[in-house]
Length: 239
Length: 120
Length: 113
Image 1 (cartoon, rainbow over the protein chains, first blue to last red):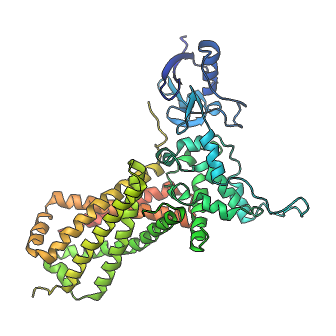
Image 2 (cartoon, rainbow over the protein chains, first blue to last red):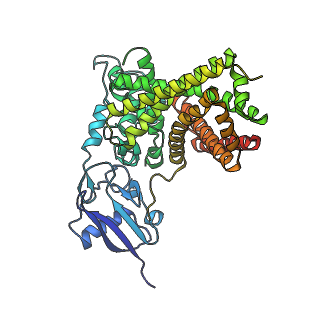
């Protein structure tokens, strides 16, 4: 019985690098991360890549596999392979550090720019806020808080590709969860931060983010919510 | 459209969406009118006969035209900003000119048709 | 080999919306100019209308009507998503939008003289 060998093309170098093809024996239970690990351990020790948990909870291993941004530890080879070939590139729209590693600085800077951090209104001396989980706003917030900042949605968004200053789906999804957090007091500034051409108003609802998010979140919905809130703020003269 | 503040961009977006709603109604009317008009054959006389001296059509096409003159330039602005490397200022200027051109051309046509004496 | 992230219905809907918008932005000044001939040169317009009743032109006009209807129905889907929060059934709405646009185009074509 012949062993099937996969042709795995991996990006090596920085933005001016190139693909190098390795041959890896295909196994029945094998993820794309397994392929990368095998290549680094047994064929090319110089290959750089990120991973941590290997079990789909940290988001560190996100890469572009056969054109789609995904977590490599949760990508079964049989689900992505095409004609015995797999192409692995780093995430799009982020500067390449080396091989499969990208610089996530822009991604997290935009998170901060979108005011994606909680602004408290109480102190430790106040009563604990009573927020019912079935409260309408709480449910909207809960729908988006499982984001772990993996960058897949950002890599899948064409507006990010076309507008370098566009905040992106993850940053705005996070902003939306805070807009709906009744304990938060920073909404005037937050809505100002997410309005305009670099913010929610440039989203064209292509929904690539929804398609690719490994946590099944819906940044398009969050951004649509931000659109409504920023317009309300504009009409009230608050922008 | 030349200014580049968050506030002006937000108002542009709102103008785009508002004019879109107005256009949805106008287009529905326009398409229906055209399909009915076509059944009797369209000609210069038919167009003039329909519109001349009719204030209802004047108002309707006036609103229609204004909505188009707002909606198309703002839409083209986004397209140009995302697919060319032209500066925001230049894009704003170009699309404003488009809006002005469409408006002037349209006003001359609508007023002209309204004031025409239909051929007997 | 290249599966891309653009291979899904709401992306195609965006593409259709953008292309139809640009085509309309080009068409409308032409349309308004031709119409202005009714005022300045009625005979020329009548000649143009005669020419435009040939099948190939009628087909192109129908194409323009389909573009208009596609831009309109796609735009309504977006307004529903943005202002009414209609997040689910997006793929169904895309399909409906395309279907309705083609239907309107057909009605136009069937009524063309």
